[in-house]
Length: 122
Image 1 (tube, helix red, strand yellow):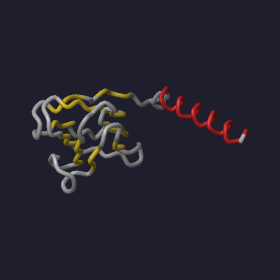
Image 2: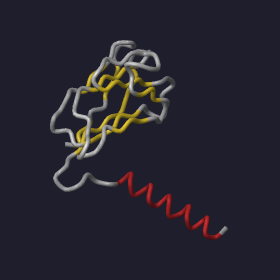
Image 3: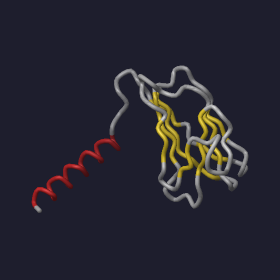
């Protein structure tokens, strides 16, 4: 029991450290978050050959899914051409330096004004 508690404390400490982590030397983070202005009409994060990674997240207070398509046009239904159907707090990783996705990212939601969080590492 005592070992389980120690493990839980260590895990929480590691998770907290990840949340505060800075990008590696020579890499900067750029906020690419935004809003799907009109439901059903996707927002886009432009292609960037300098992208070294990043992520897109549906905020935890979201009441609907966020749809993400890499290289295509995101729709507001699950499945192709979408690569992710993100519930509240759900995210998709754009990869790391050795294999980061550098193409355009399409983001969509059913209702007007749906916010999304996104970070691009450059």
